[in-house]
Length: 71
Image 1 (cartoon, helix red, strand yellow):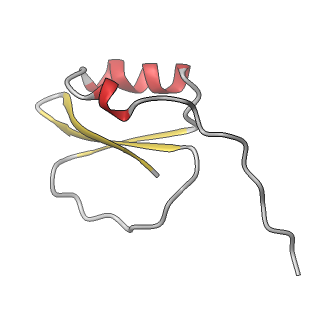
Image 2 (image 1 turned 45 degrees about the vertical axis):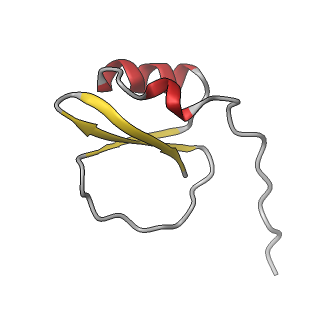
């Protein structure tokens, strides 16, 4: 059986700090802070619910981050 992968710590970052920022600026900031994957989604996008370590999600409306969550 293959070993279970271990992950380091996710960036110590507040998801609320991205809300209200322009989407491009928020993505650059997230990558600078160490997030390996950043994705921007329009409101109401249907997504799967699996948790992906190191991923930060933005809900973007009118070019600004409306909501942000990990995974």
